[in-house]
Image 1: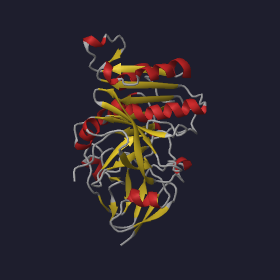
Image 2: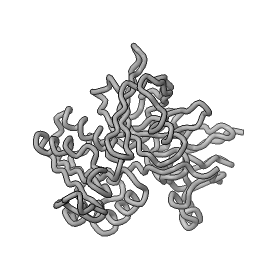
Image 3: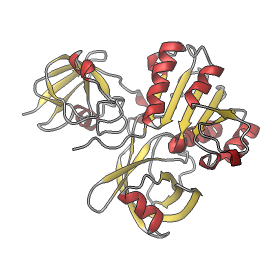
Length: 338
């Protein structure tokens, strides 16, 4: 049995088929609400139920606490209506509308071990195929058994001859395959683009971009897009890693600072004596707070480990005056357990 969902602020309405999630139905109907992981782990799609009831589905507690659930919140990537709904959620503007999600075979053209546990892949699309996307979005690598692994695209849309992905070795089956047996010229199926993590270009506010680990990938795409487009907004990039070797594109970021006019602040949390590191140390979001005690007039884009993203969201909004609606994030979370 289908149900109707209405978004309170805009009055937009769409129909959800039996067994379908609110997010999937909204996207199918051309209505884009904020979302990230699509599997109940990141919390980006969290909104409020004003009327009606849902099956809450499977999700991780870090994405929505029991207290939030009792107060009327739901994760719309997991929630399935049990009745007609009236909801509050963050709708996304026209930027992502009209972008077609495609399933495409790609050929691995280059594999580069950029750090001991980071592999850079360059993927070539089929001839006469293009993938339209926004800097910061991601694709799913679809494996033979149908399981998926999500990776942000590290290239800007104008440089789309090859798709660039940054993969960290987490020790799982796909990571082991990439680092031990994958070869150039192999074929990977990808589907995308997905996500609502992209630069809000209609704003003139200064931008702070915060990455941890391979969360640098979509930040790289955003910066290269901004430089290509000639954006004049002040931009400061913070990249947090454990040790110097983890800053796998440090020299590239330094070139941005020299030639692009932006500011780059690398931060190491566990610098080794052998690193001879004289730069910033500690938690990357704390470095932001030291430099920007007042973020009330800024936009922040944060990507990487969930603990960093959530700490940044909490502290920037509660201690630095950042408006909640000006915090945009992509949390690299594992799928919720089935």
